[in-house]
Length: 389
Image (tube, rainbow, N blue to C red; front, side, top):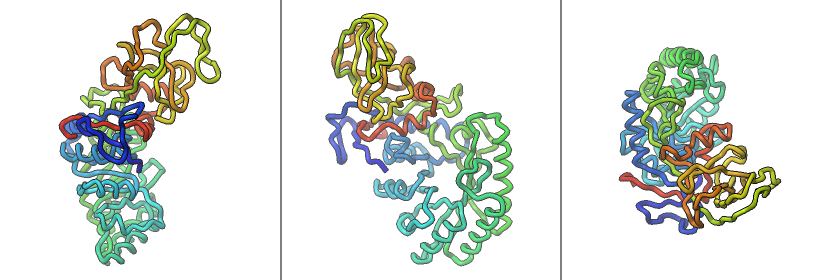
């Protein structure tokens, strides 16, 4: 997992000095906490805060602490490395890790008290063997494929998986704490696939209980479903995008607060005449005399090159267009005749009512907000504010 330099209450801490950073992702941990409380109130269940991919680029450990303090009861990650990084950060809360190689050494995460998400018989055997060597049962959560056709077992494979899990429970090497699945189309609240997946999930739970298992934790809902689909809410809802303050559906009045603001500054200014070609390839040409501002953030920092001709940033008290191709380390902004000066702040996205948001960048790039947030690179300094910092 990427280790980002951090700042708490304005003082740099960690392995790297952020003083010379050309861009900053400011993370509002109070917003994280408020989002947890907002979703919990709407869903009426416990919440698993998904902090994979270094907390969607926000910083897994600070986000996890803020989410737990606000009432989240579980943390979700993809890999053993991510789970162990939480433990190394002093976090002892329940963690589920759900994507693993079959030949992985499961000993370290079992020793760290991490629940392992299991989708295949092969993985279950490997975890059970590691537990036997440790002489302590492994806590596992079995994943069923209800229609996403990604991870998880289905059909006869599911029957085989729960049957073997029950045998391992009898032998004392495994304890099945949970059964779970993942929705494929929850951001469309009335999609028929959601109803089919709920039905498939209930059927899979019946198969598991029929095999003699007694899972105490059932979970299916993600952020979108937690906010819009009551039938998907079982014992706990897993929230990712909503945790970071992004509307997972679009058009909801969720009260969610964006947690990240991406900022930089103007490092160069030049007045150019009409007919001036800008950036690689000269595909953008100024229509009239104007001022070009250089901002030291590029695709290596997470700005998608595909936003060319559509993206805007907030500078000089207004939205101004990003012009020409975005380069690895920088982009050019046409500020027109505005009185922008060298060193002026630039907000690439933020929570302000007129500022571009993460959803704007996702729309401009033809992607989702998840990709925008997780793409913010390691050389962008993370700074933390709020009481939770």
